[in-house]
Structure formats: structure tokens, C-alpha cells
Length: 267
Image (tube, rainbow, N blue to C red; front, side, top):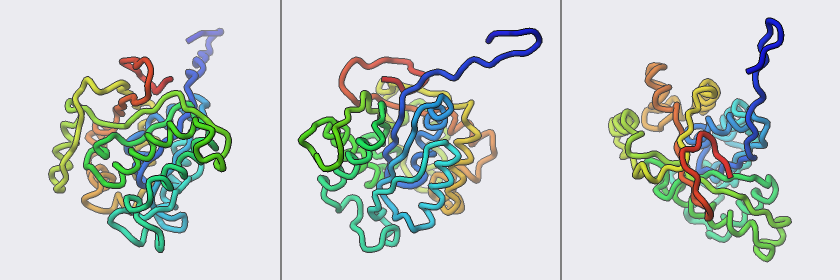
């Protein structure tokens, strides 16, 4: 920090790469990467989110619009497949897990080539905490899409090839699920975590905690229920809620050197 006279001038925000999140449902973006999305947006980086399920004319899409505005992550980009357990999430459309993988991959490739992100973030191979089938399917399709997006003869009608420089999976280490595991077990859910050494980036998102918290609670229909994670968090005292969501964890999946102890998602 520099000083001129009696006025303090804040340092410029760090330069961070453009970031695209690809997640299964509205609310996953806020829960799993709300802090890093806000962090990258605050640094002037382009940020965007693709959501695999729910149609654009549903209440969940409206809540997603509000959450993304809070995080600075643009407008919703919904693939419009049906949620695994909720057919009305996309009437007349197949469930995500029933749609042909090639179709899902193509749709994600189209968004990657349109957004042209440097970094892509998605679910881990477990399906993020509870092993939801939509999370697992989104992980699988995104891994394939990140590779396919850089190949000129794959889906040539979706635009010029674009190769993101890094792919990260949002995850949780064994050592980072203490209170969260207890909370989820109370509502009949099991938490799936990974060994601590799998973590590439552990990001303290305290400076963006207010945005992340407001984005989570913007998913009001989920926050009003007992079992979904937004509802579990909404019923906690503020201090306990903040302790659960203050740190975001990621594993770098893309090939090449894997840096350690990152405080942001980098290439």
C-alpha cells in the first residue's frame, strides 16, 4: 500500500484469469465456487457459469439470475436438461443423466468456445459431497468438453476451437468437512471427501464472503427447505455458516505441472 499525504491508495486487484464454471444445478455455483467467482470478477476477469439442468422459464432460473448478478458472473447459461429427481424442472426434456453424452458435451463445448475461458471449474468425480447423479454427469461431460473444445474437427459448427489452460474440480478434503459432515448427516446425507493431498488450491474467500452468502441465500426455494445445503446453511447462526463456506477447495485436473498451495485459481 502506498501513501500520498494523508490519503491511502489501495493496491490494484491482482490479475486473475477468465473463469467459466460448469455445474449441475442452480445453487451449485454459489455453494462450490461463489467465492472464487466473486474474486475473479473483482479482479476484472471475465466470469461466467453454465448450469446443466432446469429450464430458463422456471423459478430456479430466476433465482440463478439473482445469484450470478451478486457474484458478477453474468447471465445464466442453462443447458435446459431435467433435474434427476424433478421432471418439472424442464418439461418435455430428458433428464441430464439420460441425455446422450455426445449431446451434453457438444452443448458445453459451444459455451466454452463462446466464453473462451482460461480456467474451467466443475464438480469432482464423486459428484461433489453427496454424489448426486447430475453432478457426476456434469463432471464427466465437462472433462470431455474441455478437451474437445480445443480440437478443430470436434463439433465444428459450435465455433472456432478454444483450449482452456486449466481445469479444476471443486471438492472437499477429509480435513475440511468437519461441521459440514455433521450437518449433512443430520438430514440423512453422506459427505464424500478426498484425501488432503488431492487438493491443489485452498482459497480463503473471506473478502468475498458477503457476496457468496447472499448468492447462496438468493436460491430461496432451496434455502426454504430442510435437506438441501442452502436450507441447512440458512438455519445456522451467521458465525457457523461463515465457518463452513469461508474456504473453497479445488483439485487441478488438466495435464501439465500442478502448482501447490494456491490462493486463487491460476493457469
